[in-house]
Image (cartoon, rainbow, N blue to C red; front, side):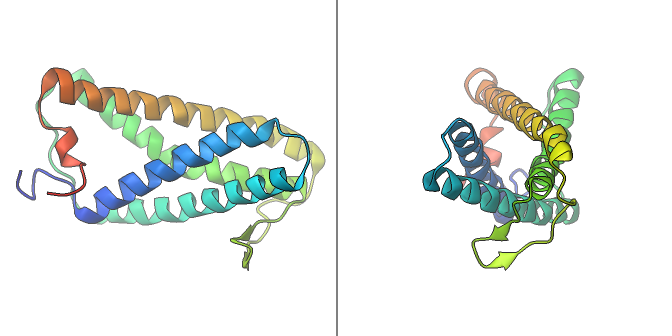
Length: 177
């Protein structure tokens, strides 16, 4: 494949880095939610928040990169598949921002500030308000589940293109040459 048929190296690196971080944050979020209060749970919550803020920052970088670097042209496919792919990508991009921002708002409303990697204190996104926290929490969870569903759909579509269509779509985002 030539360079116009593949994503740039930066786009590929950001894609896979964010994919790993999102899967990791989701897994930790599921695991920690039902743990009894303990030092271990507190550490996991902090890790989850640090990764969420990092996802937010890298998503901003990824969006800027995407807006300033043209992606490869769509492969030939039925119009409905192209529309579904574009809608899924737009929704995922929105969720890359919404999930961490809603999580940050929840943490702020709960009265637990975020100190990124224990070094950089971030401003509260909203004032401390227990009632607001209880309203926000299900939004963070629901948006995270929606993102997980769209990630599964995205992966399934990529596998379908690789195994059934054999159209080289997966190679466009594969690391390496």
